[in-house]
Image 1 (tube, rainbow, N blue to C red):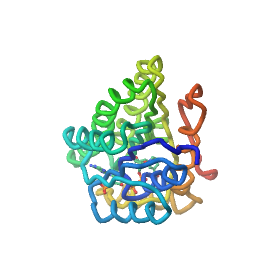
Image 2 (cartoon, protein in one colour):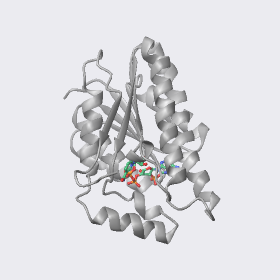
Image 3 (tube, helix red, strand yellow):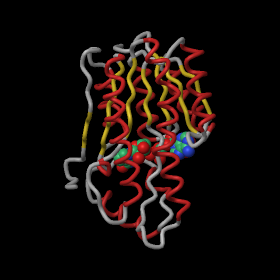
Image 4 (cartoon, rainbow, N blue to C red):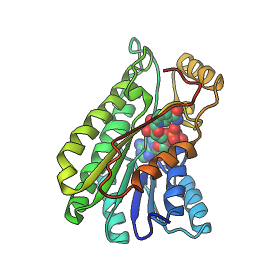
Length: 247
Ligand SMILES: NC(=O)c1ccc[n+]([C@@H]2O[C@H](COP(=O)([O-])OP(=O)(O)OC[C@H]3O[C@@H](n4cnc5c(N)ncnc54)[C@H](OP(=O)(O)O)[C@@H]3O)[C@@H](O)[C@H]2O)c1
């Protein structure tokens, strides 16, 4: 129970990496605010945590709305008396070529993966700085390190997460606030189900199925590792790939 007495907010806690992370943080003793759009799935995550003896605050919200992000952080702070850990995990990966792309896919990725992460960070920082303690964990990807054709705008969002996180780290380290970037390779989650370009979807599915993918719990353990280090240790970056993934 390394996080007893601590509080956390996890965006995208309705499935995949976010759900596994919320469960693991709660298992370590943290009280966890769960965020996502699908209320049913939020309640499902909440039930799992409460059944294991944890404390949760389910918050139905959309990270693309600055008001939603402000409200979610405000409610978590009010309920828990502060916010020790923010996990900016909500994301979409709508792969496809730049040429002839559906630009609505671009807006969804930029608004969710970048703006949502920035809004939640902006809302949480004043509370962390006032407490002279806090930890922002931003979920990037190997796509934030390696660019490939057919992933241009997803790459753009995850490179953006990397740049924003490093600038943030330099700004807030003197306030005792830590920043960690998590960069997973292929993880078996629902992420690929939402791809609208059928060719891009088939290609990534084939690639994913040819290897033993990471599980959401593999990534959640990396996140818990980062946030349970002594406060003088700032784990800046964790890159984890499936062993069989080359790039
Ligand atoms: N799976 C991979 O291979 C992989 C690899 C590297 C990085 N990542 C990153 O890991 C993160 C989590 O993805 P995942 O793989 O766990 O996929 P997932 O199972 O599809 O989870 C995505 C989560 O994001 C939430 N979300 C999406 N749009 C949202 C919005 N507008 N407002 C609030 N929440 C929103 C979803 O909740 P609702 O739909 O309920 O809103 C869901 O809980 C993403 O940032 C992704 O880019 C994934």
